[in-house]
Image (cartoon, rainbow, N blue to C red; front, side, top):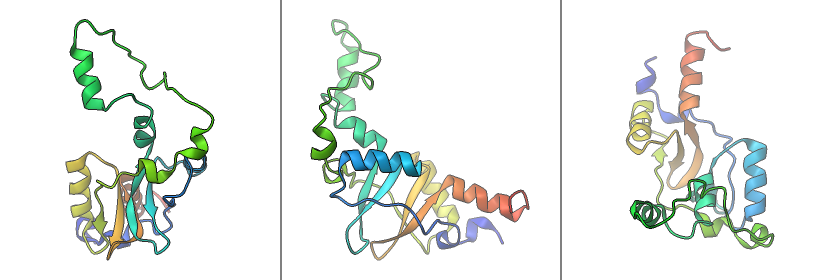
Length: 162
């Protein structure tokens, strides 16, 4: 079958790892390391997708101002540039338990309905320069579709993978 016409539901991973808004920063980072996932859907107790959290959101909470402000400041000739701003973070041990996923959740995210086609999903990925989409049905998280999931499906269809 033509993969572009396949529904997202037939290619997505249904067992996507998720976190709750009450997950602490420490738990989040440990979970990301354990699952090797850098984008996690945030769901409530009814599995309603509330947003996503990723490593960029974690880094952004430690920056003194937004990326756009940083870019403006960098253009000023009299300001010393700090090339390693991601490495010079102001941290305290309490942050691991005091900062919650609810503090860093990205509610401005792109998702796709499980009835949409893989072609539509790939178009969204390209348009938004992302590689993973939460898959929903009536706001409930049904799974996650990544570019890797699409490639695995194609490779299985061509007997490259079993």
